[in-house]
Length: 401
Image: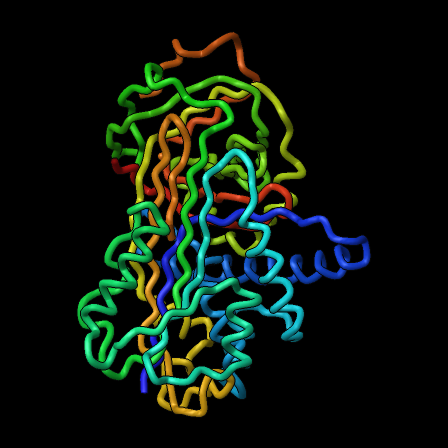
């Protein structure tokens, strides 16, 4: 029997909800443990994805949510591999509580448009164990729907894709590709996230002009380069050979962190040191100051089959006939497919993401104390400012519209 998992991605945001001091302390610890695990998984995942060529966008948190649900239904070596690969805490109740707090708080935020949803599609007549169903519904806030993969996999595929498209405002389409579902499919787990945030201080479209983006010292392409001067959180890290800029979204709860190598061809060194990047420390060392910002408009869409990537993280047994998902069912099931589609668009107004953005120095206003000129490959992170959780991570090797 086959167990199919799929994930679509974008951005998530969460806030601490107001419980009593004792409950809040325990819940905060659980939430923090889940955030730390997700950020560690983000780094490990990016190390593998960075071996691929070109632009990249991923929502590791989206994959993390789906795989954490799978872990709660796993046992034995299968569960051990998932826990290790996802950097999950050993305490099952801590994981359940941490994700419940995280996902619950996503339902209420200010200044941005946010939708996050989980769903479990179950083959009619297939019995999912009550404890697993209850965990998925109560702690992962998942809806459950019965479908008929056996008699009409095409209709089931259309139903799932329609749900994903609706939850991501049309940004993620055809997540489940033809032929993915079959009469052997028993269960599909989906996470869909949509985020739309406007910059706290928008870029003026009239200031955007075509400018060179340098692929190497000697090769460049002309791209729409946005520009503005204002007060931003900025840091120069000469010992690490990069500069960092934080661009907040309206509402003050999320921001984009851009890390730009000092050298035009310094991206490989930056990426090689990704494990040692301490985002909280970087943010702490940054200071508010006037900055002349140059940032290209860009749009990235990416579809990834995560099986080989997860196998490199030591998560292998879930794809084998002998996978142990005894917490879900006593039948023999395994993961036959895990796919993530991700989308991000950055422009003068802000960012849209779903899992689902020529320099002219005559534009300078006054004499800024710093210049942040993203005219060569750079990394970007979308962060929850309250916790420091990495919600989105990617790289721009060549801006595309």
